[in-house]
Length: 158
Image 1 (cartoon, rainbow, N blue to C red):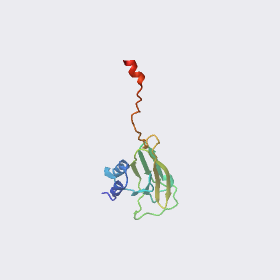
Image 2 (image 1 turned 60 degrees about the vertical axis):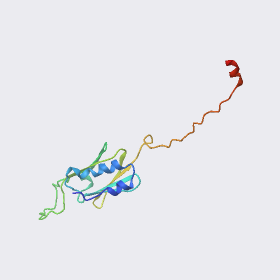
Image 3 (image 1 turned 90 degrees about the horizontal axis):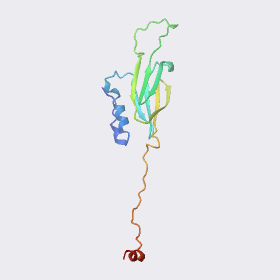
């Protein structure tokens, strides 16, 4: 079940339709929805994906950007040398492995990733190369050149 609606983004942006369509397809594969995440627009060409990864350390998370795919994986490492010998009676805090895959639009790059307060923040930016950016074409006039009537040309023809 989808708990987010990207429709407002479709109305407020031009040229990002493909980006939001790809992001909209993330949960269409029938995934479990774990861990929950947010997608935010932080600027004109900047975005942030925040994934709730409470209980995971930096070493247990990996972020891989390949072509137009961003993959975030988390895997708890079994602590064999644990000094804590307590027995867990109820496990309400999820500690299962996960993998989230996001399809990114063309020219979207991962700029930064940070972990704070149980949230993994991945900052994205859309950088369009100069060759692909729209450019203004000046409109010129094609007025006909003034014709010079020369009497010598008429005399040569006669």
